[in-house]
Image (tube, rainbow, N blue to C red; front, top):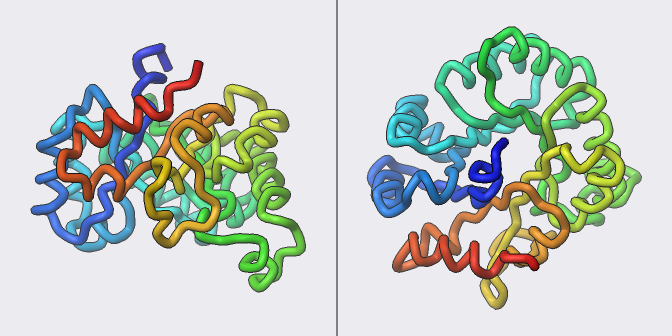
Length: 236
């Protein structure tokens, strides 16, 4: 990515259930200033057409469907997502090596492909929650282990909380991308997130892309809220 692409590091989460609210927000944002994320709720409600529309409006789209299935199903889903013209897609790292390698190999057949990142540990989970699932690691140790697996399988990066960025960068290299949800401006509600951080903390830790939803989409002025995130996250 060139410097301009790297500077456009805020990804606005379009967590809506209908096209009307989604388009209302897109109309208030400039695709030169941010990227957008379309997740399960909006995709389920509106289908691939909402993705194509956002792409047509000039937005880089992170299609956040977190594929986690048998290798054949996931590689086919990744290929179908790439056909939509998206900028980034994701899978669950816990799907294992065969699934991760199948997704990478399928996308590498394309002349142009989206970035492929793997979800490590959801930011709504803490150490107690992952122990209940059956993992013996802490969230930090599990995230780093899954990041190493993802890097070894050839993925471009991972989705992780701010708290794991530094260790993942040390283990996987500075060029291994980190996409960070659970970002909240100082003094705002953490909502349903457990492992959160401010925009400044996320960037200071080395986060490449910050996913921010409600602090922007529920603001009275979305564009102003977006630029406030950039201002708050400035490091240096």
